[in-house]
Image 1 (cartoon, rainbow, N blue to C red):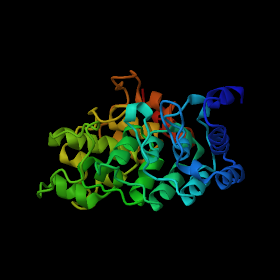
Image 2: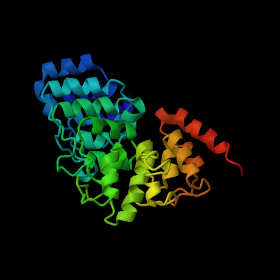
Image 3: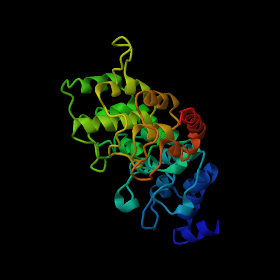
Length: 318
């Protein structure tokens, strides 16, 4: 606590007390602080990030010592939003690169590890946070995909995030859109993507990106689409000639589809990829790890599934 107190010593005392309540998940103390000083809900930190109290619920972009797994962070956010917090208030975290609470949240480990990222996203969006980002460029969804936070991906899609481009559609599991795009029926870029997300203009590479993210998110229906459509022949991305072992750009943890599926414990997808030519011996370019190696770095909430994938790899003849 001394470290927290040292960090907050520069803050106005009432703001510091409110921050402590937020990062401790103490709803009673937060309500009391807001009742005593209602203006706190829109006050800002004196630190370089200039965060509001709502930003602290994302556990990202603020001082490391103030980042915690707060299992009722969605309730804390509800108190703040109910008191008038601006859901899309910007801050200066990361030099303004992740300005809103939602943008910070979808790249944060702590809410995902605590299992409440989805509920936080839901309450933010219910109170008016821009699910497609303040610029309408799909920044939250693109960021959640790049950081492999699939709980956040699912929550954003449930909140109405647009998914009309090949990567977003693959992550969403919208097979009809993917099939139409593969058939070249005139689908253009659709939903825009932020400049930081390298959706390739090359359709071959874009299809590889779609395979990687569909595999990561467990969208087996996109990977194979409808295998019964042509007497058992695969009609999915792999059936259209997409390289199962490709490692296209686009992810914070860039790797082939097998790696991204293995890390998330997507057993059905991993088995399908292996049966269709995925090479378990390939090492990714960044970490020089195999797909089995990636299972050892699974998100904590998906370790059991990743262990099941590791057992699957153990059955492969050497």
